[in-house]
Image 1: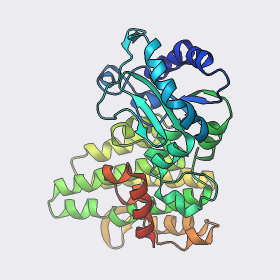
Image 2: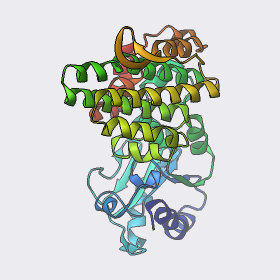
Image 3: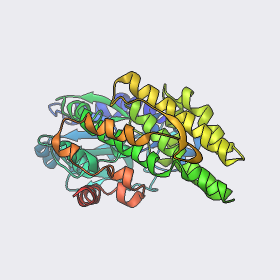
Length: 355
């Protein structure tokens, strides 16, 4: 049994009856969100060595959290079986400890946690409320954090608040989407000729390294065109392989990584760029006329990525976003894990980066 189904069954058979008996008038939501390979359905036997098992997150109003969470947590430990469906119910402590702050509480003895939605938003995104979020604020939300909040499963939603929050964050607003598309084309524009130039001077390792970076950029742009949040590095390739867009791109991406000659590498990447551009035009997203050919007078095959950047930026309606430098959202500018998992710092750095 995979983790989501284990936790859903744990809620249905253990947690829900406990809450119905201990606090029958309590309004709450029950879910499994936030972290864990099981949120994406990617968990396997290896996943079981850390933070895996029957887990349920109960979300309460702030008043109910402060009035009931601590006593319910303690009472649950008294009725909890030591195992459930053959899995221990105790906390696997690496790398995430049991929840513990002003808006959340958990215990080492079991996988039941209590949260407020406001606290969950703050820990994920550095905000406590969804009202008043500006398009530019979205640029401080890493995709992996948005995915971990909107993936997983909701088992019960008594007042609908968690569902509304997840729906509001289900995908980028259109203008934010266009800005991120423009920024990924900018990344391609800056580096695409270097695959050939490095190879031309005999730096095959350097050429391969640049090609690998560009493969990542193509995949990231593929996630965007598929309107699907990208997971972090461990599951990036697995998630990409499940996109409808992947079948068209993967043969050229694999060839770009496997090619032994720099010109073959560059040509494979150029075909992938052209496929991205074709898909983008078919969707009517910042359409432009793609042109694949030599890089000025040099024998490096590239695409007119600058035109893609300009077309996507011109399609943005929000003047604040349209006036930004084409630098990128926080996770387009950096893949540094300590930055991306720190919600407050992500917001701060994004604001500083974009002025």
